[in-house]
Length: 142
Image (tube, rainbow, N blue to C red):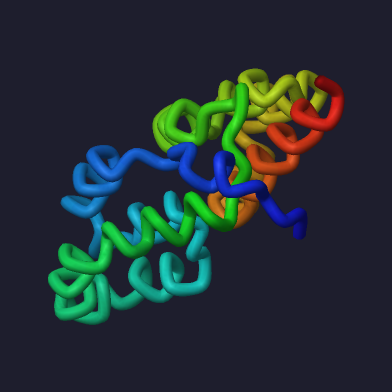
């Protein structure tokens, strides 16, 4: 992974406000997926936020998760929050793929219901990395 300069590290990538809104549904792991934690997001999904105990603890962990995401992912033209909102609400139609400039897979998602929702699940696991790679590529070409 590319080492970012200090000025880049301070650029926000994920919104803490959005994270707290997602936390309301956190027993399903949505805020953990948003911060790039797919393993624990999946665990929260299948266990109801670790029987709601982990969900309540996460209320206090969100600021740290936000700082960690800021350090792990590159900021840039492509906005993480926009991509996540599109994936969450319109993922089966591939709208987030169009936003990322991935037109062919966007059309494929549109015609197949997000590749029968398996592609949507894949994107829940990898969306942060996809956005970060696009932002790093754009920064190299400036």
